[in-house]
Length: 619
Ligand code: AMP
Image 1 (cartoon, rainbow, N blue to C red):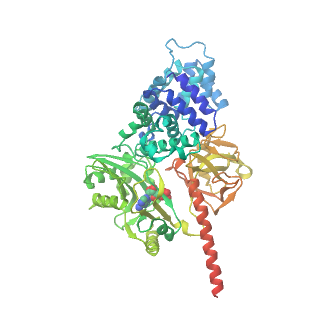
Image 2: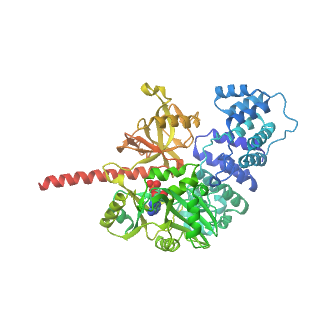
Image 3: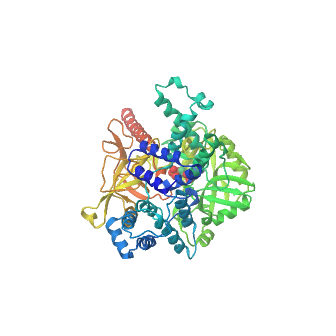
């Protein structure tokens, strides 16, 4: 495919704010692409060249990009800088300047998607002393052959401003859209849905698409690389998905914890269960194959280098040949047998002094689950069986141990255990359904967390994503930032719905940082996946997640989270606590969670009132 053709699609994608339309355009694009191209196109649409877990960025410093634009367009660098100040978008600057270019280079040729992808991949992979020069040469080579329109997009890759707003769910929906017609008569689909039950073809089609999408997502959850998944489907059809198995070095999407606000609710929901201590550290997914150890963070980024003492401990203490397991790592004082405060553990996020820190405050790993063991996928086993494996592989371990846990069906036991955990400086407890499989990438009451803050009058903190901001007024005018417009994630619709305007709780340094990072991701119109009735002064790409506390959740006619009959939900008196850099936008609190928190909060208030009334009556 010519790159020019891909640019046509980019423009169409950029110009729509409807997700359904986006899925349609993407499916047309992927249908048109050849098998080899589809993989590259999936990555390119998301502004990357490899799946996220490879942690590879195309990045070139802005100054160098300006230099490349200057050279290729025959302008002085100062002119490029001036234009950039005016336009605020280097892509547009490149388009403008290349349009005025006197003559095209002798060597220019029409760009193909393959060529653009290959050069971007080389740019991303080049490291070392001379790498900046190599990167500029590769970028200039592309610019030399590109039309102004193509240049606009090419520039956006290395500086990270290609924001088409295409999330992974949208790509999966597009793949299902392409293939559903040829699968409506598949045996397993026919077994699950009876065509005659559906009102019309459209409703039936929707159901088949959602089943196909489920199939794709199941593989994505154990192999989060949609480029490769698209490649396999293009080459071998949906049947080809069977080839995808758990692999050493490819992360599994983590299971997530639901929340409930009391031990009674937990027992009502899942009955007799395991109650584990909830440790507050880093969630690590560890892959071991012989001596080869790879560590992924909660966001599925490769972090092996950051935790040398864990790598060593895995080699020494985990005796099985091949295993994938998960646990929470935190700084632990072996002398006093106490946990260090979270502030100490968190220091390990620094990229320097890793060796020194790992000696001074070595991390201890508390293992809570296992997904793969000696060549076998064990995710489908009930938790109680997987727990046996966890105990087996950690037996006799010193730095790697199983989480502490009890099994009970009594709310009183849970409360007692919970209080013990809190007293010991832990965060609370996580209840585990004894019969549940490991549910990759989802939150389905297999795990239920109970943290201290739920038990007060107020509910837990909430993680929201920033989608825009209002400029500072009054005292704040000296800052550019007055308040943030924030949203939560609607998983079903793969979009972000607003929940709060946050104007307080910021520390001065947080404001400075917010101003800096938000100005880098400004966009000039509402992002396609944001659903809002409020128009902030500036829209930003949904990227940064922050943790906030609030007094309560109230109904709101202006916020769109959980909107029913013109009434949404909003946070009352929200205050920012911290950045949640470990969370991607899609990992923030969901609309469903907010709806549940809203209901639970009412229940809590009600019982309190009832108790008071009861008390009054007996007096
Ligand atoms: P939260 O980050 O508040 O949504 O809580 C879920 C997180 O608790 C998981 O992602 C783990 O990192 C962490 N965690 C700590 N202890 C446990 C445990 N025993 N079982 C499962 N998750 C745990």
